[in-house]
Image 1 (cartoon, rainbow over the protein chains, first blue to last red):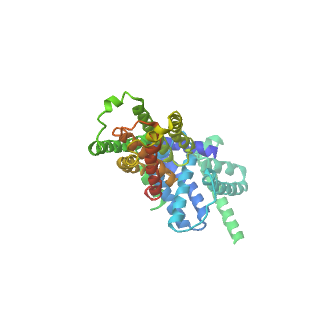
Image 2: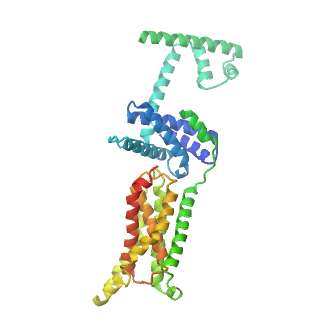
Image 3: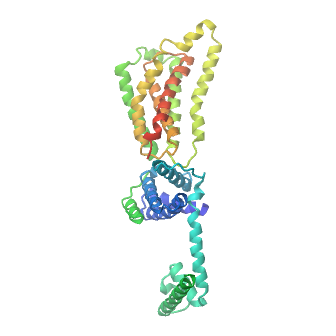
Length: 183
Length: 213
């Protein structure tokens, strides 16, 4: 939560200063957190959860002047999300008791999802030979260009392309194989 | 609308927002409301004819200081309550300080006064109209402050409404002090405060639906 806070707050302050790119990045990140939060609180009502995500983002945008830069941004986001959730339940005449939660409730759930996705990728990659694995990680996860990855591993750009392509093909085959095994 | 399209739209036309935006808008509403309230007081009740002489007395400045301090602290409280996710506990206690001080001073004053003169200090000659006049003079401020506050994000609506009401009431009392010629501390502590708290209660009563967003 602390690392999250520092990152989001920096984006928010840039956004308040008029930086549209930082602001777009902030809203996208908040959208992910909010979606996970509302889905957990509303159960399987995915459409309602998405409406609430949009309503919260619009409210945060329209009322962004109410963020005090000396205070935690995560607390601000949580208070708005919770207000919108309570308002939604009241409007739908759903008298449901909400558990008392704090900012960590908004900024924790999808971490688990992200972590498990990350775990799946690591497991699949572990099955590849070391060289293509290192290249795929460099290009697809770290975001290096083919040329940069080649320079790092003392390979030509073309050789990197071929190796990455073969590695991805092998990965795709493995995933299909697992799906078949699951089904 | 898809959420990523919404995000595109929201960040597309982005205007910078200054930290002081909230306080500035609240102050604009408050001052506008007080200007109207002052005009109403002038045309309806009139400024007290002995204002200049009164300005040489303690009683005048006591009323002035009480209502002004109440207004300023209520302003800080409202400003705080409009921000989601922050505690307003300190501001709530602070806003009680002017009344606590005045109540102590008024009690001391009453203690030093012979029995026969006490009722005059408490009731003055206008206690029946004073709270009502304060409520009436608060109406323009009340409307202006609630208009300001609609752009903010209070999450505890009844509390925020009550604070906004107290702010309007204190500002109304400040304006009323230009007409009122009472100067006893016990009178101000009781009847001024009653008027202010009445407007606060009104604010709390309507806050739940007026301040929804």
